[in-house]
Image (cartoon, rainbow, N blue to C red; front, side):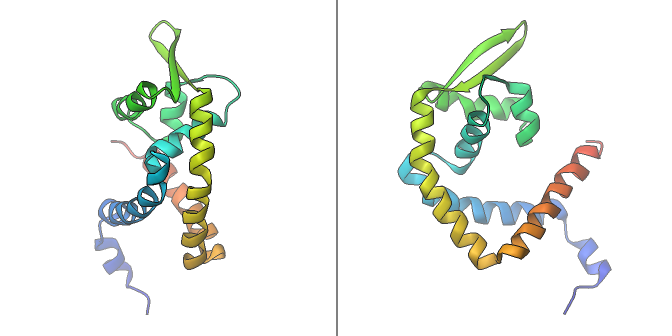
Length: 148
């Protein structure tokens, strides 16, 4: 039975999405543990690795919806472990690139992530996941357009 419009509107979107996110992140983090990466680190490394050249931190922050300070905190251990190189790009701008060690770490983590992804999508349903992922992309765009 479908929930009434007023009942759906009374559920906090932020709280509902946060519970869902915490639940799935917990699973992916456990699956990625053998690689030494969290799901957040893995996503960040993959986003950096999709580029053929160093990428500005502002671009990565925008793409992954990171606050600047959160991005720096997430990059810090990756840089310390030699997985990324953060360099100056211009006055007051930094860029980041994967190192060879970072590429190898992503390669190690990828099959672990793929297994988690396949199981989740299989349980959720491929068509349902594709539709829901598109809706979540819309959520991101709506939230970006809303004043903070």
